[in-house]
Length: 416
Length: 186
Image 1 (tube, chains in turn green, red):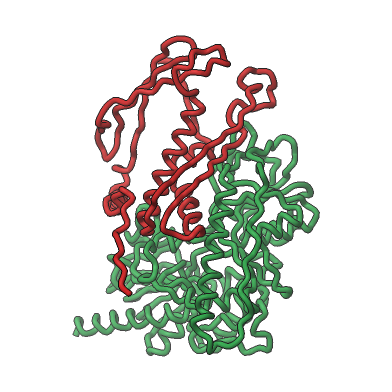
Image 2 (cartoon, rainbow over the protein chains, first blue to last red; image 1 turned 135 degrees about the vertical axis):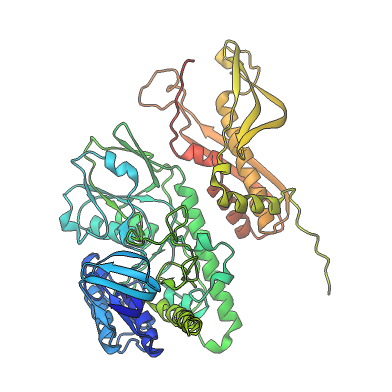
């Protein structure tokens, strides 16, 4: 089987790319290991809502039509949203097709799947950044009696044993799970490393509205001095909820969650936490205040935007005077550990030498280095800050599909 | 009105640091350093340590001179006080590391420093080292560093520099995270 372009993955990024390829009349297929929106269907917890308001999921030729633009989609709504997009754009889908290898072949690439082989001059990797949960290696040293859960197989607190829970990681996933698990009656200790604190609303608007409005989300690779760093920024401490509540470390501490430093070791049956919690919290407060200042400056410079609330500064993060540094496991104080320690992509099927020393695909804004015709999309800060968000797929897909079309046209010119 | 701005100079060659960062990203092996010290016991609690050679950038390196440090205990410990206690040397290391970081970060952010003063305090219950109470740890029960900084920057920007210097500090990392230590008899 053959196509000019094979797109791997039928999530929002792959579908946005498919739509842009269709607009350019580029013959293509979208291969998907499961069904449309597969990760959303199979790897998310029950209570999860998107962190972005409904209006802020603008895909090429598709946007929010409902009557609750400021609400946050739950998982079933998110899945339906993406499914409807696949239908509306008539994406040429091949679902339940697992790719086992992509390698140079034919006049471009050979794509081996469990349902036959494809050849294509161009391949777009849209399999997402969150395929494999990152779990620190010390996890293997935990006693068998302690249950371990990762966010892709966590559903709700009821699946955890009773008793204390250590949640490791305080970005979006960690703070959300810490809250609901603690409220389920299981006392939570939260290990906090680098994190980004944000209020849900500021000056009467959603923080995501502000980040979009003042241009944060549209910042490009040229706008940041350290691209590598920008690509590794942790997810924002936010929760999408009907009451639009802010969920930060202060809120969690008020609920009774115990804050400790980053988990850094396991020795003699004791988990060890870094003594750097105070600086992690202070750094995060400073970063939050810089964003709020930027918003205030924007309001001052844009009087025509109308009345937009009043400036506000939030209480500093209150860190315990001496957070505990160790946790003895034999005491039974915790019965389970939730690893909210991030994800990495799975590119194990990609048999093209395009990886850097940390096994990341080398690329310039999604154009894979030293592999003509190979593209990757949907990764953090691929081309701009919003690249990994649903709302970021449109601009990236438009630009990458333009590059891809140019590559195909050039190839045809050379061939004729 | 025109103003003359003097270039920011904290005595840090940021260009060289950034160049090294770039070069070492390409050659991660060269980034592997080994720091060394030798020490000889003198008498009682008095030891003399010296520092000269280290390994880095793929080869043996050397300080301009051999630096010597005496460590001892004060007279209230029935010692002769030929030098600071080893735990005080740890504070020296932390202050030196954080302040160097502050200078580098400030330079990179084009903030002129005029003075940077640190006061360090570390609590310790010596029931630990004396073996009086097994539940008391030997080491510090906490460390507090207070900076007084005079610089051409807002208080918020100064706090951000201090936060970043902690994030990039080796000694801060050594003190806040566990490290495997092996002590052998040759």
